[in-house]
Length: 445
Ligand code: NDP
Ligand code: 2IT
Figure 1 (cartoon, rainbow, N blue to C red):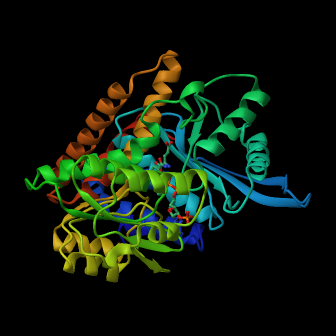
Figure 2: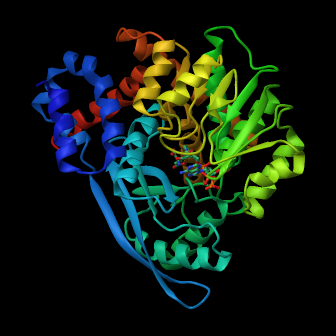
């Protein structure tokens, strides 16, 4: 067996049952074959064996009291995967499905994504199996305070800088930051996604969705096509989906679906600014279900279904991992989909990815297409370090520039290694090379 196979076998043996982690590692390792061939010295120093083993995994008890005075216990995690390029950086996910394998896949992806941003950030991820759905603000606050009481021992502005992800938005970041500040008696950039009045960056809330559309625009430039008037299908209705829709409206495209974990709405007329404001109020303030959109605007609601059967020019999966399987990918391609830009992390199964690559459509994998969020987190860290704030225009311009450079670096690595137009190969190789070079410079760590 070859080096790549040996390392993958080791990963499966050492991390039994962590299927999403195996999936993420397998995709990256497959892409690295041509790089490993050119660099036999990597095998001599067991570079890949080190790359797939987190530097540190922290697991902890999170006890909290619910509104009925009942004691509850959740599990908290922080995966500090790789710090070769800078402090560990990556979001926190609060969702009942969270487990060690899911967070390891997310932290592993984050290493290469952060490398692609051009900013100095290592890879990390964390979270809890806590379910914020149906909880009162008081319960969410007490949970966040208990979570941070333990997590604060392991993070810091130059060590590890968490942010949001599924189930962690402005409200949760506020409670987490308040508790960190109280315990450590310091005001620092220890979290990103902060509100603008206490150290946040303009455009950070918008950044992942905007960035995913900017990446799509860069891909489209290679074929000369435009978004104007074209139907776009979006999954999710949270942070990433909302700002994907917003940017698509600005570009004159026609976003026709959004979803949540119960189902999706299909609005053939297109979601406009006013309807998007309704979604934002529904999801961010009232915390209701997307079904209400269908009732309010008299459009179709599809219960327990995903939106991939709706014909579209472009698809923006922006909910969760493995939400597009082989059949969904075939349906998208058959119905004329020309572009997929992944706002979510690993939303397409490996078989689905093969369908997109075989059809030769423009396919932007998550670690490139959704890197705008963490890139703007990096810009928030820079502003915190300077104790200065940039204008929204300045941050947006930097974000656009970073997305264009991620596109260019991925496209170049893909064609340099003989896989033109394959952004999966390109993003994995370009992201890996910087991390590998830094690890070689450090010697055996
Ligand atoms: P939010 O919590 O704001 O929104 C998540 C959305 O996805 C909700 O509509 C939610 O529905 C839906 N969803 C979550 N889990 C599932 C599921 N298992 N099945 C179906 N639908 C689901 O999260 P974000 O928008 O921040 O994150 C969305 C994706 O983008 C994730 O994959 C995340 O890792 C990725 N991402 C986020 C970044 C960020 O900056 N926030 C940066 C880069 C990537 P419901 O309300 O019913 O739960
Ligand atoms: O998956 C991701 O890149 C995020 N959830 C954002 C991480 C960050 O640190 O802003």
